[in-house]
Amino acid sequence: MEKCREMAKKQLAVAVPASVISDTPHMREKTSKIGIIGRTAAIFKINEIIVYADNPKVNQQKDLDLIATWLTYMETPQYLRKRLFEIKPELQYAGILPPLRTPHHPLKGNIRELKVGDYREGITLTKVPEGTQVDIGVEHPVLLPGVQIALNKRVTAKISKVTGRVEVQIANRDEVPEYWGYKVTVERRSLGKLLGSRQFDLAIGTSKFATRFQDAVESLNKKWAQAHSILLLFGAPTRGLFEIAKDEGANLNKWADFVLNTIPHQGTETVRTEEALLASLSILNVQFGFQR
Image (cartoon, rainbow, N blue to C red; front, side, top):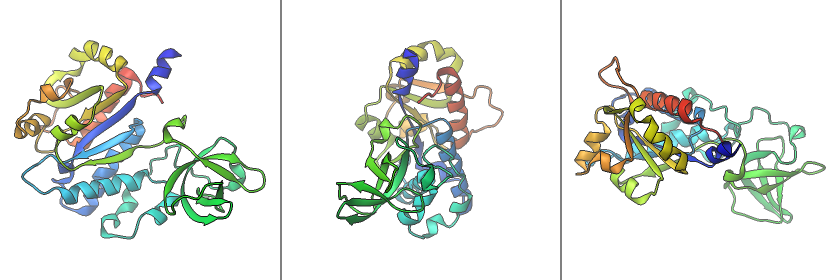
């Protein structure tokens, strides 16, 4: 039980490069590729997806924003998307993004099925004398009593009353006992700047030129057990992490606590970022268990 409680406290983040879609020409295929990344992150209960600029020679602003938009759209419950996202070209193929089917994306929207203590994602609609009305994906808005907050703001709500008019209270996502999706962070500077500005207890890079996972697992076990915040780093389709670090005048082995090859004896010349993400998280999940 104590071991489970410790693992439940861990915060897992993955860092993927803006260049992840650079080798995909069409917007439909770009959208599909990011859909795989978002879906994989949800399967393995990732708390944060960081999209970083990996090529200082190219303006990656557009790709950074595209990836962040798609990932955020995926993470947003379906019943809130029309209120939070405008119709724009970047989302023309949003229909091919796979559903996450996580606990904060409930399929049922019947107000009679709500129970005290349930959590729902919502958006603030209108201010009323009694407080603020919130859309949580049921037939009618519910009341956040005694509080008037900014409109069109996404909130995590906890059901506090179901008899008569349904009422909610604002909750912190960290208090939700189930996996409650990922947040998206854009690092517009570089991977080195990301690692310098964020203090992770454990940073793990991935590369086919690195130590095999099975050869480092004993040392990794000890570090993993002690770590609260863990970052997994992934390279680009045409440039791995060692190259990205070298371009920044850095040594990847000094950036990361471990650099691991999670796909030894690969049969292809390269492994795509989304493929490396799925393979790496699968191995780590079997070894450590991503409990929440």
